[in-house]
Amino acid sequence: MNEHIVKSYEDELNTLTAETARMGGLTEAAVADSLDAVLKRDRALAEQIIGRDERLDVLEADIERKSIRLIALRQPMANDLRRTVAAMKIAMNLERCGDLAKNIAKRTLILADVEPVSPLTRSIERMGRLVAGRLKDVLDAYTASDVDRAIQVWTRDDEVDEHYNSLFRELLTYMMGDPRTITACAHLLFVAKNLERIGDHATNIAEIVHYEITGQEMVSAERPKTDDLRP
Amino acid sequence: MNEHIVKSYEDELNTLTAETARMGGLTEAAVADSLDAVLKRDRALAEQIIGRDERLDVLEADIERKSIRLIALRQPMANDLRRTVAAMKIAMNLERCGDLAKNIAKRTLILADVEPVSPLTRSIERMGRLVAGRLKDVLDAYTASDVDRAIQVWTRDDEVDEHYNSLFRELLTYMMGDPRTITACAHLLFVAKNLERIGDHATNIAEIVHYEITGQEMVSAERPKTDDLRP
Image 1: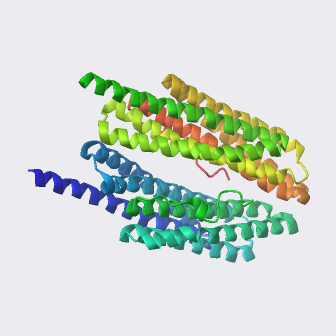
Image 2 (image 1 turned 45 degrees about the vertical axis):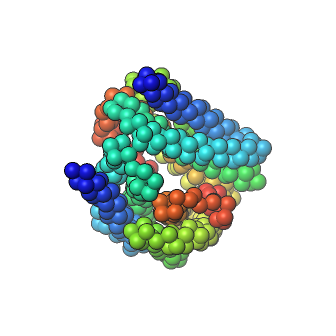
Image 3 (image 1 turned 90 degrees about the horizontal axis):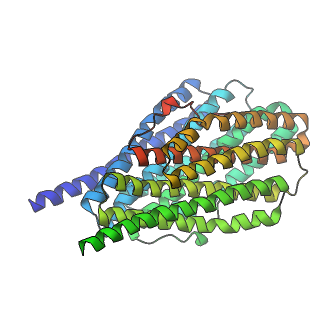
């Protein structure tokens, strides 16, 4: 009987981790697709991403409910508690990434109606690939419980900032040079900001994975500070 | 002995609610101050807000830790569980509002170096007062456990969107009319976006308070949809 309880408790924990990993895969796909949509001005894909987002919301609510239930009924200790809280927090970060991908998709619909600003497309693409890669890497770290990989994502947070800063300047230069591009550039400014925020969520997830595995907080002072100034 | 345990459990719950309410007060002040700083181009106030943000991060981490501990050790049921989870989630939303206020403060430092775009100040002020008022109202609803007030905040979510949309158009018009304002306007675009996101967090908190008190989810379909498109 006791073993049955222990077994079912481990099952619950494993299910929680698996659901979070699966939500990670769906989010990764949403982010990659939103980047494709904005680069190719693909309305159909954008509409599809917008429609798919609700599933991420439902998954997040489900993971949260299961985590709280597990904490309340199973009273997990140490490692298991960290694992449960990690699933809940990673799901929250993924849900926000999904919202940001949806927002990029919505802006794609607007951008598809205006004149493209082609030279900027390459800069958006570079930044987007970098951010999508970080999200992939940190989800690899999570599913493989690979703390070194999580640390790698975390320490390279400033690369995204550099891309964002240079894209911000590039966008402003375009706007000043040709005021007809202002509407498109204003939306691309938010696309860039959304990508940067997805990168921040990847950093958050890296911290959560690190804490889950080691029980130690990462010290933000050690990381080149990345918060929202990047003017 | 048993009564002692019950008493101390209630104490823990009350402390959690009080700390969350207090964090609410500090966040409300940070948001109101960040608005003043940007409107008055007040660098000293902006620097102060940036310095104060860490306290909100610490409070949030503390409330989260206490909530999880309470769920694990006390196994609260029904109302008490909702109350505990509500404190944790409200603290998360407040921490994000604090980050957004800090970001407005950082942009204030940049805006103080460039030519002011005076006519826009009034629009930013109107939107800012509206958003600060919503945050105040929802925190009133939380501390008074007033579900009607929470519903009021929730149903009037679209007012912020209308302000944001009109401000977005106004900013683009300025940029087009006078390209020298582009840098200032780009930062004001993000200030407006930050205010709108603080408004979204107030809406989230309204949903959490409603669920805490009634045990019922609010149906988003009933609310004029407010997500991030507002182009």
